[in-house]
Length: 78
Image (cartoon, rainbow, N blue to C red):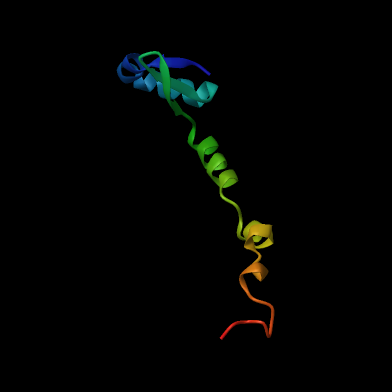
């Protein structure tokens, strides 16, 4: 992963994009501090899909259980 100062990234964006597609993610820095990453769209979509749980995962998760929210039968206050 290469680091591009923002001035070079702006001036040579086509080269930055080609390097991203050819070599993978490219880091853009501002004043010596890493500020952003340019990643190929395929990798971005893969990361987005991995970060989003499926409906099945949500339903099977222990946090999805609602038994604790309902009082036992016959013991509810009126």
